[in-house]
Figure (cartoon, rainbow, N blue to C red):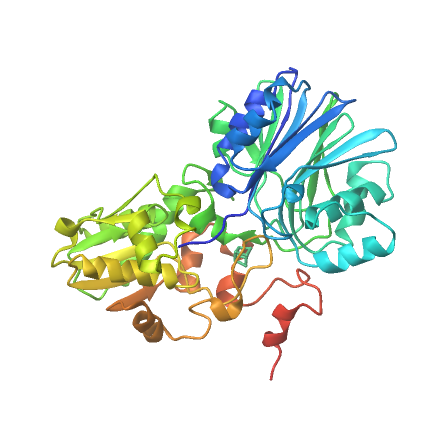
Length: 465
Ligand code: SF4
């Protein structure tokens, strides 16, 4: 699987004014959710300082001397763009402004599906935008919303904003965390002693010795201040629609998400996939790193050897590969090292978590064959992706998705594989807890009612022709 990740959020309300290092460590545990830009906002309740830039978390932290910022409230963000042009420093988060003498800062994970309409409406009211990010619209909506409390403001926002938004904010002397009424993106509350933590994933708590307390509920806003923690519902009642792709691919395997351990979930998907096996297989080879737990579950269920026939090179990053006009196969060989002695003359089950465009998987199949495999059977531990995501995952257009216009045998031919087996949507549902609580729109092309504006192009192809 190769998809751009999304964004990571981390926030602290502490009894201490030395939170910068902890803020960086928590965010560092979420680096996998975005490697394009990072940012930190720290406040003592009166003054707020923010530093953000393009780059990895530790580089931005060092460059901005963030360690020297004093305050007991902090929010931090690591970014991979889904809205707004990517490699522009002004699109990095948090966004900050001062309103009626209070500093307000926001960091956001998700994607507003009516971002264009919101921006247009704000522009027509004379609002100035410093970026092309939909998060800036959220900030302006918050500051302009009538209401004396964050809860009242979010209630107003929820009547205008569509799509996915998990946010952390500083408003004066308060830390705020909120999750949209569908709950597309995760957001978790944690504690260490009297300190309160908010994070996209529980892995961020583990690194700090904090414990996860509970998820922030869809449509819930938490306000943390000197008087403690206050929770309230702000949004209309919606069916919960947690992103199943967080479990399949995005989240760290050591996180617990939506009440489920990510690593165990991926193994269960692999095991379910193995139950469908009809071919003779000699070895099971994971596509590293994302296909590893599924391959383990698959191999165990079939009692077949798991072999690392492809080793990932950890020294080759995007910035090294992109300047070369290398073919896809060449790029795959730079990133994945095929072991001829393992693959030679074997019937290989090549296990990955998912396929998007199919171009990288196709190159991997080619390389595995080139290094001696007798047969290559692709085994995918999720259903075919047939429709784009509009809720915070940067997917290509529908036309570019390999499964949007091909049958399963056609996909196998396109990949150059001897066979391909996916999980069905129903089989995936067997592997998640409370399946009705999950968004699976990219596998079904059915988007949750009320999640997209009526004139959204995604809804056009669902209309009868
Ligand atoms: S469409 Fe797919 S990727 Fe997007 S929120 Fe739904 S399950 Fe997640």
